[in-house]
Length: 247
Image 1 (cartoon, rainbow, N blue to C red):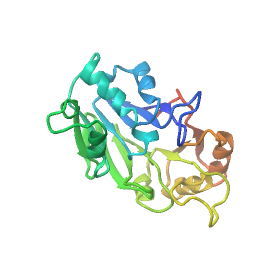
Image 2: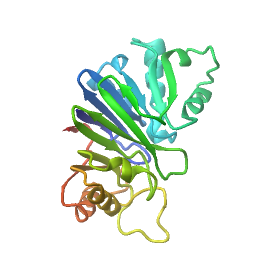
Image 3: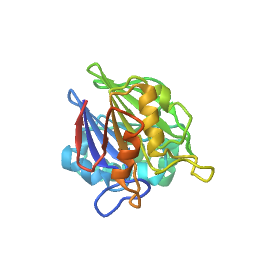
Image 4: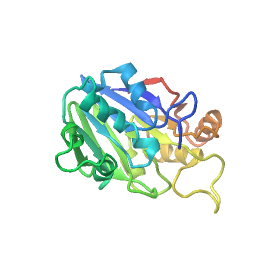
């Protein structure tokens, strides 16, 4: 299974890094995991977007879902591809996106996307998907992807608590947000993780490798890696845009 980082900037794209988006490939199956701002063009550099087997959106914040409308335009009015494409997300996300597109029951938006809920184990080609809810201000899911005897877990956005730790147990690669730096205090934002907490989670869950992501443009990727590494003695890397990781 191959992970390609389309973008990893937290909250907003930067000049050199799109927002959150990842391409997962295995055995001819292609999955777009989050569609943050700027990631559709990066996706198109790697595959024909019309070949996607599915899309999973962790939640409705724009830095994780806005570029789904780029794929919509491509499928509906551009080169097109195989439709409908399954789009899975937390409960209510599909209708939220359809409302933005002003898509009634007969709208083309609903003919190119099969809008579903990420609430049960799902098979997409060679990929087996499982989900867990996370701690965030809007409904959000983390995703576990298994194929070929290995497992990758993506956090989406999450503060402490929720189902992420259990979902990550024993996975080969944990791709996890590390939005905050330094120690958590009473003033810390409760709906994102510190890099130290991410390292502690990786150690507790017994993961093989840790990739930190969702570092905002005002953050420091090197410091995030260092703080996670201080709590986890396994491999820790940053999800640099354009990088690939084989699981």
